[in-house]
Image (cartoon, rainbow, N blue to C red; front, side, top):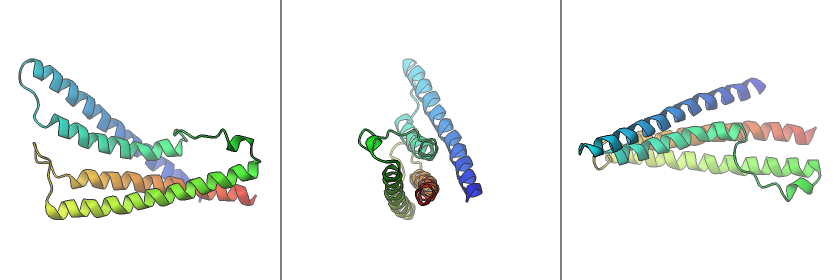
Length: 160
């Protein structure tokens, strides 16, 4: 199980790099569009591409942030509780979060398949939208895997 946890961490790190590339594309495209607007030649579809890249960037960065515990956690109540209770609350939070991200993965996949079936494209540059929705599903699936690995570690600590 430790090896699987390491593989999930490595995968989340790789997806974090892909998220960084998406943010870089957003930044370069936005800067180029602003400069070209000054010369009255804006890049068509910039708003759409930035929005789609934003979906990729956020969904691919979620797993790494979850693995590194980079999210906000409110602990002012649980900090005063015994360590065993804290571990149980942490495990319950990880379990419910894994369930939530599992549902988001499932529904995003259904939505992406529906978009693919109907041939939905963006308005200006007519790029298919379904691959970007699939990226949300993949990112959420990876978050779910990170949370399940964390849940396993937490339950192991509770038992000990």
